[in-house]
Image (cartoon, rainbow, N blue to C red):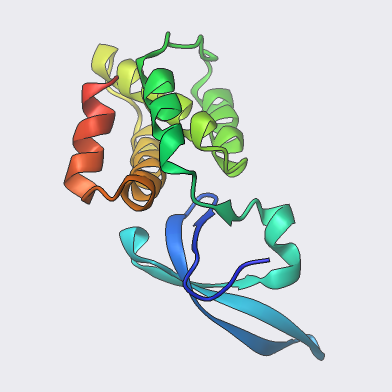
Length: 157
């Protein structure tokens, strides 16, 4: 599915590069794993090759789709559940899809909610994770620095 050197997105972790493909013993069965360097969350991950689709691992978006992300960031705030626990679960589920437009919507909604009234500690952490995921993909897709990606996100919300 992917080759060494390809840039991918690992939902809930962000964008990274496949640095190798290795075989490991898992419960007595040899399985192939992608070694993925995720520099923006400072993580090295092993992702089972045969579970990539289920986990939502995908290639980085084409640079031409960055405008779609900006459109979502500029879009209307969606109504969110008043119950913080349900809202947190809903946003987490959206992020787990791995769809950059869903992640952008979560970032937009949470940033605007935070501007109105400070978010809870858990939602602040979720917002930071969502921004890191979104911005790390923009870095790879558009050739931006992390600061430039952050400025792009913030200025379009």
